Length: 178
Picture 1 (cartoon, one colour):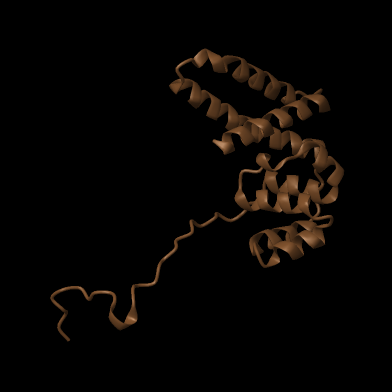
Picture 2 (cartoon, helix red, strand yellow):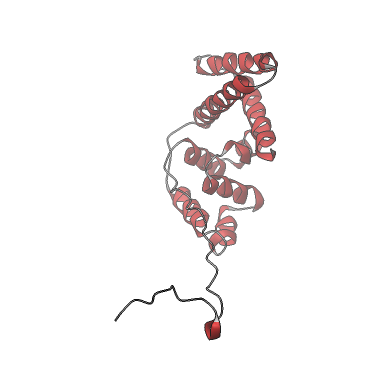
C-alpha cells in the first residue's frame, strides 16, 4: 500500500491525539546509608524523631518512606497508607521491616551525616566559584570540613553528630526551597 504524500491530520471524528504525559523515571532504591537510616527509623522511632528529618534523604522513594514513617503511628499504617498512592514506598517499607541490621544507630547516622555533608560541601564549593562574594562561604565551608573531620574521629561526640545533622537538614531545606 502506498504511503500518503502528507502525514495524516489528527482530528476529524477521532478528535485530537491523546495527550502524553511523560513522568521521569525514578531510579530504583539501592541498599545503602539511606535504607539503613530508614531501618533506624523503623526500629527506633525515638532516635529517628530526635535526629532525622526528610531533607537528609536524597532519593525520592526513601524520602517519601521516611515521611510516611513520621506521619503514621505504625509501620503497618504507613505501608497501608502508601500502598495505593506510592507502591514503591510501601514495598520498600515492607522489605525493610523484615530485614535485620547489625549496625548501631550512631554508626548509621554518622555515615548518613558524612554522605550528606560531602554532598553539601561540594555544593558550597561550587557556589563559591560563581559567587560575587566567595569569602561569604568560607566560615560555612571551614565549619563543615572541621565537623566532618571530628565525626570521623573514634571519639566523635553525639553532640557533634546532632549539630551536623541539624545544620545539614536546615541547609538542605533552604536549598530545596530555592
